Structures are given as C-alpha cells and as structure tokens.
Amino acid sequence: MNRKLFLILPIVSLLFLAVLLAKGLQSDPRKLESKRVGKPAPEIVLTTLDGKQFNSQSMQGKVWLLNVFASWCGACVTEHPKLMQLAEQHRLPMVGLAYKDKTSDTVNWLKQHGGNPYDIIAVDLDGRVGIEYGVYGVPETFVIDSEGKVRMRHAGPVDDEFIAQHVEPLLAASNVGNTK
Image (cartoon, rainbow, N blue to C red):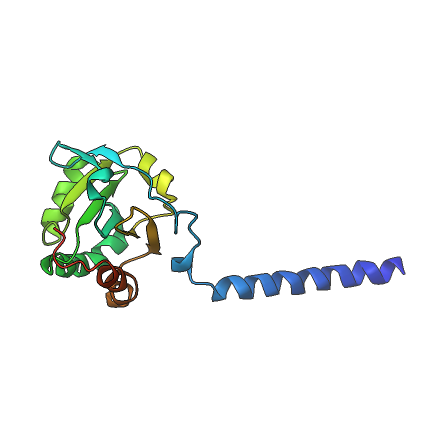
C-alpha cells in the first residue's frame, strides 16, 4: 500500500502543477486585479518635470488619465504615439507619472519620441506614488472619474480599444466636452 502511494503521489502532483500552469498561461497579465478600482484615487503631491508642484486634488470634477511611464520602459515607446493622438483631441487631462526616472532622462526621452502628450508630468523618483497606486510595472494607466475614484487600471500600452471601452463612456457620462 505504501509503495502504491509512493508511485501515485508524484503523478497526482504533476497533474496538479500542469493544471495550474495551463490556467496561468490563459490569464491576461493586463487584467491584474487592482484594489484601487472603485475607490478614491490616492492623492498625488509631487514636483513636476518643470519644477512646479502638482496636487491631484486640482483634478477634482474632471475625468482624467494617470499614465505611469519611464524612459527605461520599452513598451512605453509603443504606447507613446497613441497618447500623442489622444492629447491632440483635447478630450481630457492627461497626467504623466515619471516612475523611478531621472528628470533629465525623462526630458530626453520625450524629445526623442515625438513630444510631450501630458498636461502635467509628476516626477516619482522613489516610486512612492506608484506603490500607493499598486503599480506592477510600466506602462500602466489609471482612469480617474470626476469624483476622484479610480475606474480602471490598465497594464501595458494603451490602445484604441482601451480608450473606446474605458475612457469614452466616462467622458460621455460626465458630459465632458473639453476639460483641459
């Protein structure tokens, strides 16, 4: 009896691990749970890229995006043209959070990749604000509604589908024309 158990246990363990692996491979890493969704966005008080002070309380009453990016982020290059396109539409304020990045590197990266799509860039040198938002990596984008609640967290580069499904409905619901 003991010998049969000794043979069956490794087989059962391997089957269990195979099921876990298959389940993990089917999950979309961009849909990681966020404990912030539906709750008030953490307050941001940081120095901006141009040396001023940004307080997220100034965004109250507006639907806005918080886009976490960095000069060392490869995927940020992919999303940058979409953010530039969104900025040209002047539909909503976009705040960039330069995550664990030197100011000079951020400035150079923006110049190198076609400009600055953000209305404000807050500098999160130590990553404290990123931690408060539960950032897993960059890029990540948070949609914050006019009541100051996080409505969506998106990991990875933003695309047309993200804008259509998560930004446009909030803009329509808040009757926002040009909020900039």
